[in-house]
Length: 373
Image (cartoon, rainbow, N blue to C red):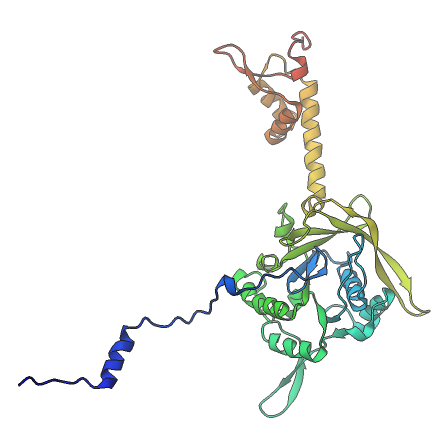
């Protein structure tokens, strides 16, 4: 007689479950499930809704006036300068740590005709203690994103958030640590995308000697990396009263052209004066890099011109490369400038015979062997 040993069903179930691969805790989706949609613009090809934009520049050049101008356009559903693209109409939320609402922010917005009912200034965050007491503290991007989201729902219809300067709202986060800044900005970026709101973070320039505008934005590169667009506000060195708004980067729009503008005084009443932005009628094509390196470019060009003049004056017919380099060094001309001048003049070293030295000759003087006697 064959006896049949039965395994309890609960044990069988456990054996089957243990054979299954563990479930992943990673959230993912198929790209086929995503519906393609166009970019929603606040300022067509310049500032996108649902994205972070950085506005950088030295103090006193008009960054805050620019954000006031933008607030005016957005609250009225007006048109942007030069290209006359129309802005969606919406509310504006301001976080301003440096300007007073009564004597600076409101007068600037009045000067450009903003709808003040659509501008909301975040003053502070109410903090409740366990004992029931409460106090107010400064807004903190590190811990107040949820508070900001609740505020956006209360206000409704927000199209633009301005954080000026963004460094004032980091909540103790080290602005130079890439990982910390990425972690700080990610929830802000998600919030912007969720509500299709353009976020503009205003910041300053550092003292770096880098020739790239991208490297000149204060703090971690993560600020610029997190932004879809970044702009430089700079002075036109040839025209002191002229200002420039130039793209440092723009991953989704126009990164080749910018704007010229001036800041004009406005009198609102006998006791209140302010200023406003007035844009030029045409786009400008200066690059942010070239404007920031204006001084060094002049020095570099001056050194090049000196080296060119040296090669034109110093007879290179029959002169060896070593002779030219030696004479240039004695004249205080760097080898780097000499090489650039050589290229500029089209000098191509040629060997003087099979075993001879390399010779430098001006192209238009190669046949004038007696020109340097």
